[in-house]
Length: 239
Image 1: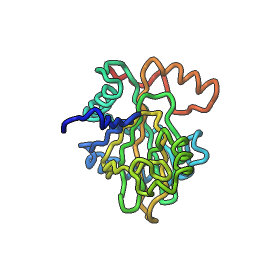
Image 2 (image 1 turned 90 degrees about the vertical axis):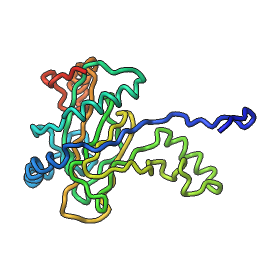
Image 3 (image 1 turned 90 degrees about the horizontal axis):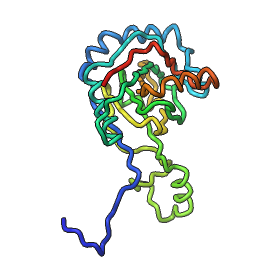
Image 4 (image 1 turned 180 degrees about the vertical axis):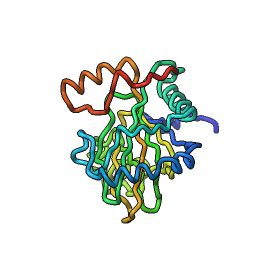
């Protein structure tokens, strides 16, 4: 298509790249670990992370289960390189935990401070009964005000200006999917679509650059509001 300068250029500002892919070892992972996770939930239904007092989610940290394989490593480092627009060669720490949801579980709007990217692996997920993560537009406050003042002209199905300014983009999330996103991006999880006896299980993780680890530990010790089990004994990953 030729460009006519008098017509102008349409630019999309402040894009937020989010990467979704399928973990190749998913079936093997589920066969090996599903019963362990279900058994844990049965005896620890009320166990939550300290920062999620307002959420309704069972959280498990010291699980000894790792899904960090070559594929996940490669995708993480590719994604960070894409965000930084240069080859990523730094050392980093991989900090995972499990979230185990029932139909009435939810997680309120939050972000993951202290890490460069975060990820969600949908270990057990039913698209008919479970809601995936919803991302919040970084321009939410300004957009909501603008929409309210001009609502008679803005259609409800406007793909750029949805009413609640949360993501309505289909990220093609299914069981086995991994979603990587910048840790500053606010997100939430709504209650289930339908009542079911099956758990919605996600393996959630942060990627923390090495030079930030000590600072995060100091913040947790000083203020007490960061509790991601950051430890100087965590294995270091050399890119």
